[in-house]
Length: 398
Ligand code: SF4
Image (cartoon, rainbow, N blue to C red):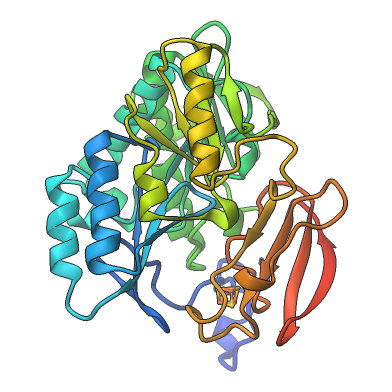
């Protein structure tokens, strides 16, 4: 809960100072990364950011090999398109870092490893993908960006509205004429396409300035106190970017990428409960590239025609992927649960199953609801004991 009222103070001189606000965060950012591992009940956990969502064949091989050699032989996908390795043994952090660095999966500066948080439309063409690549380079090239929290999120949307719906802190949305809409807080600006990545960076800088001014420890734009201005216009101006305010807020929501063959030569699959074995992960190859989606799936572009794409889709169905839009497992997600998480009241992934109805359903082992859907209405199943769950419906703002 955010509050803009000053806390009561025993010091009479402090009373009435409206700039004093309740803190929303009292701790530093403890988000796991690929270099800062999280100690879980089933071993260490590494979370790798894949900023553009794009993996090369070699990177797929390296990650599958790391899961086998160092972890539990599985790879998990997060709702931000990150990849997690779990069950990592004691002292394997250095070996993992070396493998990831050699494969080009880490930034030059390790301070930026956890702030490369970006979701990109998985079907984006070259122009929008170039925005994402440039934005990642900009984020990794500035010292001050290391102050962003590991939760601060950029979205780069190709205009279809799929990742624009994911409640990112800064969203770039491609307009049909090649320009970009920059959305931050409750404002939208129109900027030239060539300026789009720098505009997103300027918006992040504006957020950090606002967060410092508020002094409440906010990690995300929505955590800022009510009434706290994010002065995007000033930061865009300082960067020499011409921006035209569009309206109070531009909301565009598009559907996630569906499984199946898309167009003439693109294959899309989902990972059941967001987890794959290393063998399943390798089954994505050969591929020109593998795109990780924030809906816990993969997109493989570039097949030579529909027949070749359909043949690969059948092979991936045999490998255990969700490949059809009528699969009851679409929209079913689960947190780690037991045995990986000591807070879990049940073995969530064994309990999780599809439910009747059209809403996405998320199964959680406790009230933290890790990895729950964003920006949509969803059925919330929270464990209350071994195999027992409380069901509610949650709105898009949670
Ligand atoms: S929701 Fe609770 S039980 Fe599940 S992973 Fe998060 S903390 Fe653990």
